Length: 257
Ligand SMILES: Nc1ncnc2c1ncn2[C@@H]1O[C@H](COP(=O)(O)OP(=O)(O)OP(=O)(O)O)[C@@H](O)[C@H]1O
Image 1 (cartoon, rainbow, N blue to C red):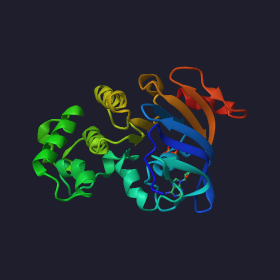
Image 2 (cartoon, helix red, strand yellow):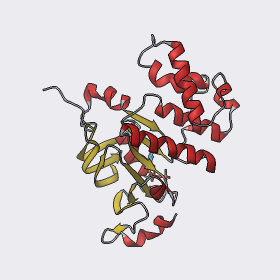
Image 3 (tube, helix red, strand yellow):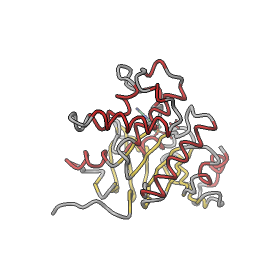
C-alpha cells in the first residue's frame, strides 16, 4: 500500500533505543513532535543529544543504529526507511553539530547553499537558484557578495549562517538543528530564531533543536526534553518548571546550563 506523508505529526518515537557498536546511547525515548511546534533537547555532554537528533534527521553516522522501539519521521520508519529515505531527507533540513566548520571547502557559498537542490536535480534553473540563495543570505544577514566566496574566506559565525541557509533551502517540513546557536552572536541568534518562528507560523514547520541555551525554550515557545545518559529525565514547556522523572532530579543542574 503506498505510504502517505503524516500530516499532523513530524516525529513519533516510541520507546526508541539507539546503539553504537553494542553500546546503548539512547534508551527508551518516547516523544511526539507535531507540525508547527518546536522541541528543544538539552543535556550534558555525552548524554545522547547528537545521537538522537542525527537519527531523527535521517543522517546517522555509520556506527549508529536503531536497536529497540521505533520512530516515524514524516510517517517513514527509521528502522526500515528503504527508498523513502530520500523523501525523509528532502523534507528534513539538518544543521549538524559543527556545521559551519565542516562546510565543503571546494564549493562557493552559492554552491554550498544550493547543494541540497542541485544534488537532486542538476538541471534546475540557475537564475532561480541564485535568487533563492540571495534571499536566504539576506535572511541570515549576510552580504549578497558572500555568494561567490569560499568558506575559508568567512568568519566562524558567517559559516554557521551559511550552514543555516543551506538547511532551509528546500523549505523543509522539519528542521533539525544540533547546537543551533554555535558561533552565532546575539543579533544573528535573533535572525536564526526569527527564521524558525516564521516558518513555523507560516508553513507549519516543526523544529527539533539541540541547545543548552537557557532562553531558547521561552524564545521558541518550545517543549523541552532533558537527556542524561541516553535517558529522558525531564520534560517541560517554555519557561515552565520542568517535570523530572523519578531519579532524574539529580540532573537538575543541566536545566540551568
Ligand atoms: N563517533 C562515535 N564513536 C563512538 N562513540 C561515540 C561517537 N559519537 C558519540 N559517541 C558516544 O555516544 C554517546 C552519546 O554521544 P552524543 O554525541 O550523542 O552525545 P551529546 O549529548 O550530543 O554530546 P555533546 O554535547 O558532547 O555533543 C557518548 O557516550 C559518546 O561518547
